[in-house]
Length: 82
Image 1 (cartoon, rainbow, N blue to C red):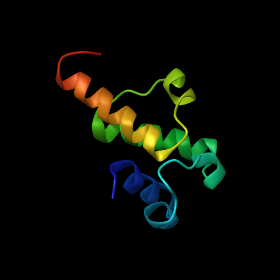
Image 2: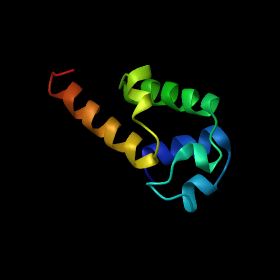
Image 3: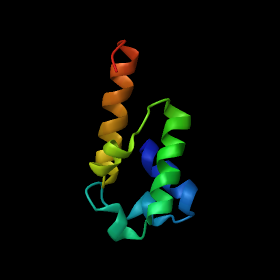
């Protein structure tokens, strides 16, 4: 299970995020509200060290979006960028 999926299950208690929600399904259409998204971002920042700005959040709507974002920013941070 992906890191973001694990975080979503932890935050919401909804096992659907582990099993039946596709990577490219809009999270807000899957029952995630704005408060949950903010908590998800805070958890991502805390656990991965990747900063997510409000501008970044505008472009993140699916599990795949969040996974790519964390992977790209995490790699850039390790390489000394961003």
